[in-house]
Image (cartoon, rainbow, N blue to C red; front, side):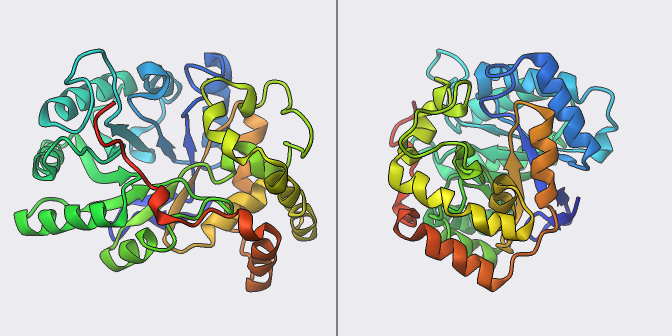
Amino acid sequence: MEFRHLGRSGLMVSEISYGNWITHGSQVEEDAARECVRAALDEGITTFDTADVYAGTKAEEVLGRALKGVRRESLEIFTKVYWPTGAGPNDRGLSRKHITESVHGSLRRLQTDYVDLYQAHRFDNETPLEETLKTFDDLVRQGKVLYVGVSEWTADQIAQALKIADEMGFDRLVSNQPQYSMLWRVIEAEVVPLSEKEGLSQIVWSPIAQGVLTGKYLPGQPPPAGSRATDPSGGNFISRMLNDDVLTRVQDLKPIADDLGLSMAQLAVAWVLQNPNVASAIIGATKPEQVRDNVKASGVKLDAEVLKKVDDVLGPVVERDPAKTVSPEKRP
């Protein structure tokens, strides 16, 4: 396992991290989840990403139990706040009230005194940005949070936050967590250039495009039984990629992976790690074997010829529009 700095901070993260969106507390049983976490640790992953909203807060509980007994100083634990975690009007968003209550809930569920990175899971159009950033800064001063970041923010939103932080003397953002893969490159035009200039890293989710880039979904055929596409909690995200044009082109990536001695999943994860602004690629798993396969992408170097072949194969099915990064106009 290789490690990279998170933004311009001194924090090192494993360039492949383990995330439990959709899986822990919902798609897989706890014993299987624990085995996947154990496999991640055995393979050298030290960075674990979750969120208060995953599986209705159960995912944090499962991860906390799975990591119990592991030396805390050897881990980087990330979580997030924004989406609803209860029925009340203040059980959502990035207000001082919700952030404060949410972080305490996350610490309790994760069985830790602090999180290494606390992330605003979306931009909150109903809370002054100063209020959110001041609350984050207070949590850093209290030692409950070591670093702060965001997820799925636009370049303009990140720039606003950095300006306020600089003017007010708050801790600056060190990271953004966007969706990023061979098929979904909406951060490349605006978010990545700004982040490189301002010292933020990307911690990318869905580098395998919810499994599409493994090649297991075949054109003209129904999704395999038990796959992400058949799961009600994950199927909505993957459905937009399950068309024959995309799936046919993905099959054409297989000779590229074969020539490199990589699985399709390894090629997909290695591809996002070629972007120097990416600090870590988040993988998810329902079985330990998937973890062991994915981590082999760490340290793989793809030359310019390989990257061009990927671009030539995927061509027009790649999504590049930065306007696709969207937060709700009103809190959900």
